[in-house]
Amino acid sequence: MVEPKAFLRVFAALTPLFLAGCGGDMDPIATATTQAPAHSVMTPSGASPRPATLAVTQLDAPEPLKSKFLALFNADAAKQDIALTDTAGARYLARGYLSAYPTDGGARLTYVWDIYDNKAHRAQRLNDEVAIKGASPDPWSLVDAASLASLAQRSADEVAAYLSNTPEALAAAQTPSRALSYAPIR
Image 1 (cartoon, helix red, strand yellow):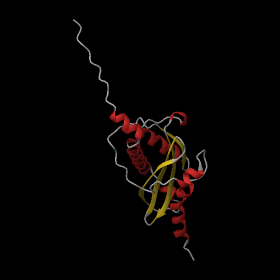
Image 2 (image 1 turned 90 degrees about the vertical axis):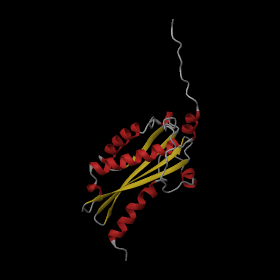
Image 3 (image 1 turned 180 degrees about the horizontal axis):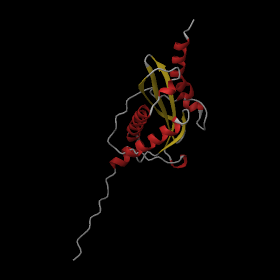
Image 4 (image 1 turned 45 degrees about the vertical axis):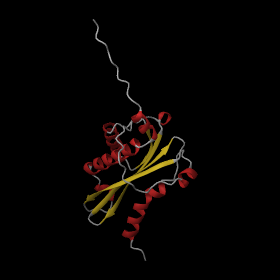
């Protein structure tokens, strides 16, 4: 017999993975067959992520946490020089999932970003989590402003690191800037 708490922990932890291939206008065959690491720490290339424009097409999370997280993520993305745009102007599309699941002594708040190229092929999966202390049968009730802000910042940092390693960002970094020189007027 499986203990109900253990079942809930496993279910909550695996829900983002189940949802990753669901819905939207993405091709489920392409999503299922694309090999992307389940978790990796991205190292920024040093190039600006700006040329690799991004549109967030979906974020699964309960309201009002969804709106708060997106506002925090958008602010952190701007600080990281991520060019957020609409789907028509984006080179990359992001589908996100937030989950909270109970742990001993609190909860874990997690994000998963599936990053797709503009042909709907998953290019990368990014994920991370923060620990939240407290006691409640509902892990979402433990999510506070600090944990949400921390997760949004980690999320934006990792998305920026990934986008800085894309062909668009690396090519733009290799293009010499055209410095304007002016001759003094006499």
